[in-house]
Length: 227
Image 1 (cartoon, one colour):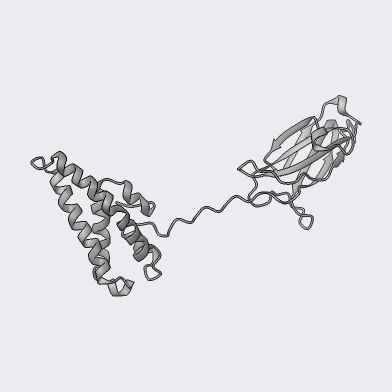
Image 2 (spheres, one colour):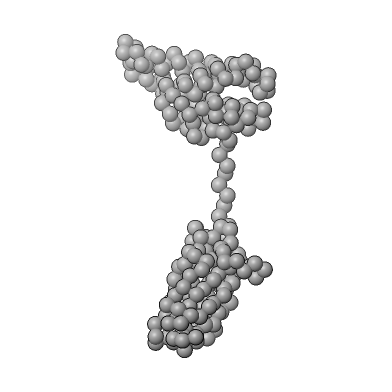
């Protein structure tokens, strides 16, 4: 029995809990001093194991599997599960004397699960380079720093809102077209009726929580039939 995360112990079947405890007890019994585990702490685990073993065997025995035994088994798990989880975390998971490989050998995760890092709110402006091509094709390259013009998104963002419209120096709310793009380099094809008409484009990054950064400066471009 292997636990993906330590708290999974509380969700597995009683027989599997016994297997988890047995693996740990057998692995550490001769190296308590090496791991810095007090004998009294070790005994706490063995007592829980013995009590759980007794109840599981009584429940699995067709001659003794009464509703009273089942209730006793359920109550015992409620009373001891968190103690076991806390014990594993304290003496094995955050114990620098226990190497990850030994934890894996006991059926435990190699490391404690890291807390998720909050998704940062985008705070950088989008910078863009716009290249006109024939037939109304316009290529947009987006980057997040003027010092390095390699097309890329800043950390924590998943895409960019792109708005554009006919006219010069339009505000975002004045742009008739708003699109979501997830690539840092993309191309749009403009219709012939837009040729030779100045357009404004603006951009802003967003993260997976739907939080948006500041709008970019206005970028001017004019779709062309021929360059």
